[in-house]
Image 1 (cartoon, rainbow, N blue to C red):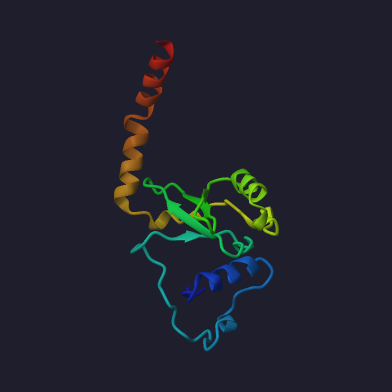
Image 2 (image 1 turned 90 degrees about the vertical axis):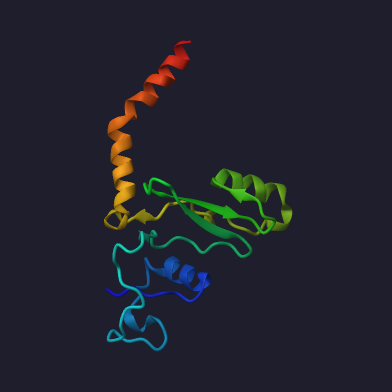
Length: 152
């Protein structure tokens, strides 16, 4: 139960895509044993997220990006194509592949927009206070103003 830093994005994706079938152990990383101290300690000095195990490796030339929402509620996943086009959904990726025959060998199943789980015990207290205030204070006012606009 020690946290390890992966040297590259490719190494991380390799571990993540195999993690549901191959368990990552102390010896999985060359030169490490279970006696080797953790690379990084799990604490509240940063916001932690846990990616879903078994996600496919991002296709060659594409990049998978994760963006944490300002309210720390979740992360949004998106992909960037080799041409720089940004995709937020699998349908957008499919349309791109269909319109660009040079990417016909790219599998649509290799794009997964599943968001990692934000570990609530590492969310900054200020963010939790803002979320609580927003939920209790003006949660209904936005709804009321929307109803008023619709009635007008």
